Amino acid sequence: MKKQWQLLLTAIMFYTRIPVTVNAYSPDMLNKATRYLPLIGWITGGFMLAVLYALGDIAPRLVTVLLSLVISIWVTGAFHEDGFADMCDGFGGGWTKEKILEIMKDSRIGTYGMLGLLLLMTTKYICLIPLTLNKVMLAVIIAQPLSRFVAVSIIYTHQYVRENEDSKAKPVSKGILLPDLLLAGAFGLLPLLMVIAFTRNYALLLILPALVLVRWYMARLMNKWIGGYTGDCLGAVQQVAETVIYLCFCILAWKFTS
Image 1 (cartoon, rainbow, N blue to C red):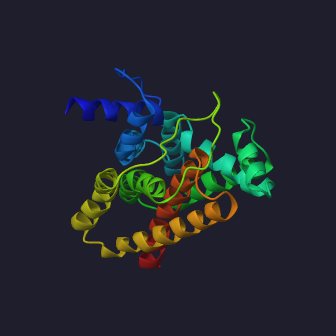
Image 2: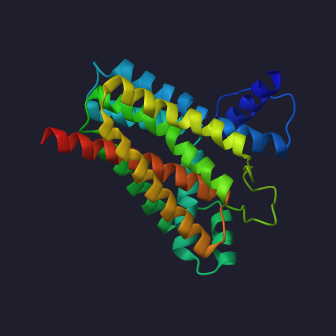
């Protein structure tokens, strides 16, 4: 139990800005800690829910939703958003594996990254705005853990491609075992299943095939150009999956109220 607690703290240390103390660190600990990445989504989702609950009745919806997105970025230090921007720059500006990896390692953001991140955050915001406060909360509860599980599944099925790491490289899990994947899946899928059981809204199951398509496309893109994944790619997968979940909520809400 103590070991699992240390693994959870390791996950919190690497994937959030929350200050924690870990007794020891090793690459193997980071790999094993990845099983708790969807649980990190519970934490970030909790911060977002706190903002939505606190401001839901005293601030305009536009402000409340915006601040909930801001707090999610603050809690993670824009860890995943940075990966998405880097992947946009790399895959947008590079035409060989070596060039793509070189661009993604650059700490500066380019045109592709800036535009991609702007469009991504705008899509999240616009998708959540039309929803009722309760539905925004449900979307957050589902999207934060489940999107991270999609990223974890890439680690299980694909190969990490950076051969030469340097001091500027982000720590990233480079492989997990099936039990880790199953545990991550439990943390990632449980909120969705609980929301469906509570609301009896079985249309939310449509989120799963949407995420399967997203995962297939992102994995195909990564395999085609670089032969696997990097830490930036995982961040991009998480961000796209999260956005697609919000988009599903927006479409379903529009479909059943129009």
